[in-house]
Amino acid sequence: MSQQVDPSHIMQVGMGFWASKTLLSAVELELFTKLGSDGMTGPQIAEALELHARAIPDFPDALVALELLDREGEGNDALYRNTNATAAFLDKTSPAYIGGILEMSNARLYRFWGDLTEALQNGKPQNEIKHTGRPVFDELYSDPDRLEQFMNAMAGISLGPFNALADKFDFSGYKTLCDVGGATGQLSIIVAGHHPHMRCTSFDLPVVEPIARRTIEAAGLSERVSAVGGDFFADPLPKADVITMGLILHDWNLERKMQLIRAAYAALPEGGAFIVVENLIDDARRENAFGLLMSLNMLIEFGDAFDFTGADFAGWCKEVGFRDVERLPLAGPASAGIAYK
View: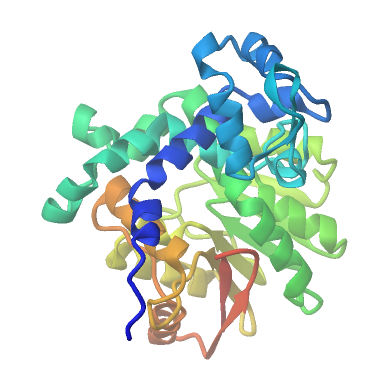
């Protein structure tokens, strides 16, 4: 006798936007930051976040049920506290804060994803360009506040994978690194912090250079980490023993991807390493749901951009001339694709 089919998974996925927006609003309202290491009652949360009385207790109780808050007691006197995870990752005072990507998702992506069906039908981006005619990077880079929000979002989503790369990859045979599309300089700072013999360069557009320089100075690493301005499609990449690209390749179509891989090959010495940090999709395209959904996000953002498998990356690199390619699992859905010249 066949087991009765259960619709709960379908409903959980189909109505997943309920949970998503509840978390995104909590991040937007800085609930986790305001809770800090203390507890608050429902009325205290309403006062601190300037919420309507109707929001209590449903809003914090929903976060309890989603395992994003802990609660002690019942009723109006119940105390809500951060979980270990939200204290670490969603309190802005924590060095492990990853909320930047959620802030950007709330401010931009949540609404754009409402037009996914249209994107699937016409293959066109559904972001700012649809409303203003300007590509997303033009929009972001023209507004310093939005640019900084975008940079912080990328820093949040990259922190775990970059730390894992610095821990897991053997840098002992190399002396210099250039991080292409380095944004705030995060990857260069992390590698230099883990490996005192390394000298690192964060390479990005001139408008980003001051942001990176401030971050590098704040980390106390200006002697070994530098910020250099340039256009990675128009200018040769700075030469280094290791060329890295963190969440860069997936922003582009295949022609542009190949242009960047060739540029990395040209900038490396014999024996050098080209490392991409991406949410590499498993070769069978069955398991890394985050990587596959990220690829749909690239459709929303750029139309013809896409994420890719480790096998895809290996094929492209060998076509350019790299001799060996390997995959190194990092943190969560992220992996490093590593090509050796």
